[in-house]
Image (tube, rainbow, N blue to C red; front, top):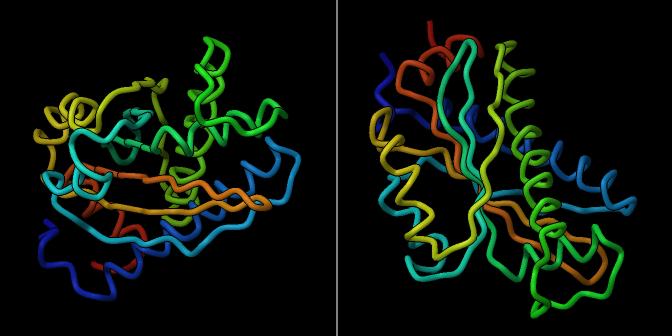
Length: 205
C-alpha cells in the first residue's frame, strides 16, 4: 500500500507529469472549442491536504464555480475542477464569441456551457492518466455548483474523507490573447488507486 505522505520526489514527479500532460490536453481541447490559439503556463502540481484547499482558492468565502464528478474502472476516485467567477465569465464569453464582461448575469445557456467546459477539461486530465498508465478510467456525469469555496467543498469533502485526506492539486493558467484564466484541478484517487497508478506507471513494484 502506498504511503501518500511518504511519496518520494521521483514518484511525485511522475504524478506531476500526469498533471502537465493533462493540462496540455485541456489547452488543446479548449483551443478547439474556442477556435483560437490557447497557450498554457506550466501548472503547479503537488499533493496537499484536502483541508488546505479553501486557502488555495482564496479562502472559504471566495465565490467560485466548481465542476465535480466521480470516476471508476481500474481506479476509482473523484475530481473537482474549480475556477473563480471572473475566470468562468471570461471563458463563457470567449465560448459565446461576445465581449468580455465579468459582471454579466449568467443565463441557463451560460451555465450549461460552463458545465460542458468543465466536463471537457476534467476528461482531458483523466485521459492523460488513462493513456499514461494504460488504465480504464470512466468519468461520471459532472455536477456544476456556484457558491462560496467553503460551501462547494463541503459536499465532496464527505466523500473525499472516505477515501483519502490528500489530493493531487494541479493549478493551470490558460492564456488567449490578453485574457488569462486560472483553473484549479483536484484529483482524489482512493488510497488503493494511488498504488494501482504508480504500479501501472512502473514507479513501484
